[in-house]
Length: 66
Image (tube, rainbow, N blue to C red; front, top):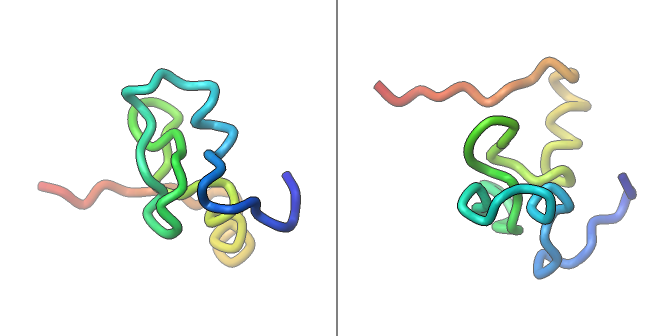
């Protein structure tokens, strides 16, 4: 992972390795990322990095929908 993120027009590498129906916009920067299904996350790797630094590698997205 590089320290400087490429332009948001460039997809997250995870989006290139998953089926197209699992790709969606990052919740922060709107970059295309592997968002849905097993292994998906609402943030791209560049937006997730500061979150993990603050909360640790165990941080996970929790669905709060009923």
